[in-house]
Image (cartoon, rainbow, N blue to C red; front, side, top):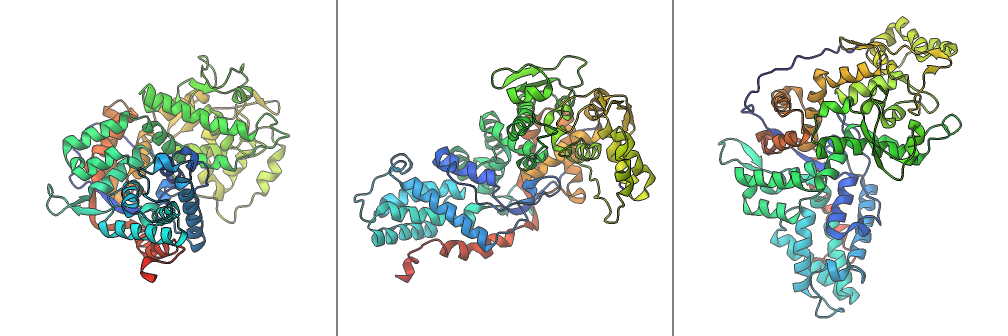
Length: 554
């Protein structure tokens, strides 16, 4: 049985713990980060022409992004990465793109041009590797471009092969944390400037550093208080912050599951794949507007009646449809209150043909409160539940779990809160009754009693674990791996107190995290994730690329 208890908030705001530090990690680019990188450097038409060749990741401690530190890359997946690299490189140098993506023209189209190749590869390699290329590596790439140009009698074909070599290298595919001694804290280590730039960029923007951020790393500005502060302010003011935070909340809420979510077309004919994608978009728009545009209290996402509406969603919500996406506010007293009553949460955490208080209660605890609900024991007998299918309401059907000791422990922490949402069917449509029977929506959330969904929404808003969970997930997302209660508890507590002091607003929390010592200071000698994968794969990546053999093999 899982024991859940509300924790009292420490009202004091301590200084950041002196031993705050994060772990060195090597993590694979996510599919979206791969796509964002190609789009930023080469354009959306090129990024949109390929599927990101990134293997699936296991959700780790609530986040797919944390799983990126543990995912492996098979030989078949390396082959897919190479195929994508070949396609991208060919498009970059084709006649449609070369004039604005390559900053020089060769003296002869049919011959090698080391000077032009070096200029392109130095600039592009810096953006893809997220740091300056070492002279030896740059010379190797120029040599590859020259040798391939001689073999094909085509300068751009040679340049494409050198670019392909960059795109299949571990320096691009993996985000690698590298440490250096911290001159301000003898005996401690910090991320080097290039690693700090990448950590900031993938945290706030879900994409690679831009040229300005790389310049700040190269000049040393990122390791000064003023320089880091100015950089973070610029990043928080950028339009890229919105896409970065959409990616974080999409991950935190488990919205990747929408890719395989479907409803029975006979039971819910109004719910199509497009409707479900709009439901996902509605919640992300609501979150971004509330937290970034309005800069409102995070907790109020669970009691707000303001959202956005599309024509297909309006059918499910039972309101008049507008043209395209439009702002919408439900009336006071409406059962539609906060994120828990949006179609994205209700439909995603239901079965194909009916609602599920258990799934909804589990999602509420795991997504928003960071509480783990154990899976059912392997020997559970579902016969009693099947025999109760004649019951009129979900509450009556689920009462059988209270009679089975193997089930009762977990269902007592999921079902009561999920039953408060039974005014909404498996598609998220409002209903007054179920099978003609009245619905009892009353329940309890960790000691707080409520009578209806508005009461549940308020209990969620004021739950002491709500803000702690967001801080936990953001810290893990930013530092590239799951939080350790033993190692990070005091650090998370400090950031949570700062979050409260700043009115539970997202931007100040992001600023505190990015500027905190824990974000850039690393634990000496402690490494997690794929640290060996990048090194072990280097020869495979390097030499599977050049199809004409290495220059040394001529």
